[in-house]
Length: 203
Image (cartoon, rainbow, N blue to C red; front, side, top):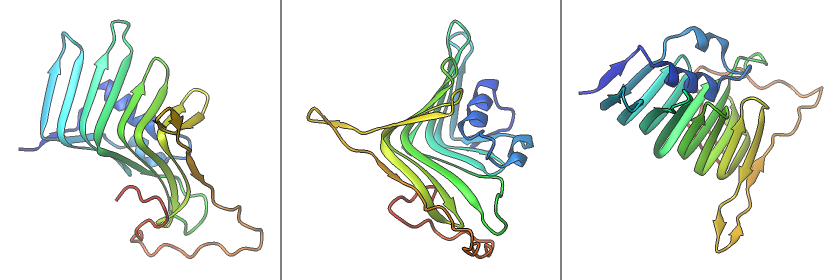
C-alpha cells in the first residue's frame, strides 16, 4: 500500500523549496502543496530522524523529485540534513517563461543528493548531471562525479571522479547566445518532446 503525505515536515519542505528554489523557478509552484508518496515511512522523534523508502515521489506544482529513499536528520544544534538516494535520483522543475513559446526546464540527476542546512549547500554525487532544456532540447548541461551548489553565494563547483590517482575531466555544454535577428523558437505544441543530446534527464 502506497503512503500519501501532504503535510510535510518543515525540514523536507525546506529542502524541496531550496533545491530548485531560485528566482527562475516557476513562481506558482511555491504556493502549491508539497506531496510525498512512498511505500514506507519511519519516524523517530528521539533520534530526530524521518525516513521515506520505496518509490519515493515528491511533487509541488511542476517540481518533481524521484528516488528510492529520502532521509531527514536534525543535529543537536537544530540543523537539518536531507539525503535522497536512488538509481538515480531525478529532479526537475519548470522555470518561469522568459520567451513566448519557449518552455524551459531544469533537470538534475545523481545517485545521491544532499542538502545541508547549516552550510546552505546542495551536493549531487556519483554520476551527477545538471541540465537546462528549452522545448525538450538540452541547451546547457554539466556532468561530473560531484556537483556542489551554494545557495548563499549562488556559486557552483563540478568535480570529476578520481581514478587510479588521477581526476577525470568534467563536461559542460553551453548554448550559443541568440543573435538579435534570429527568429524565436516555434511555440510548444503542448507535449514536450523527449530531451535530445548527450545528456538525457528527467525521463
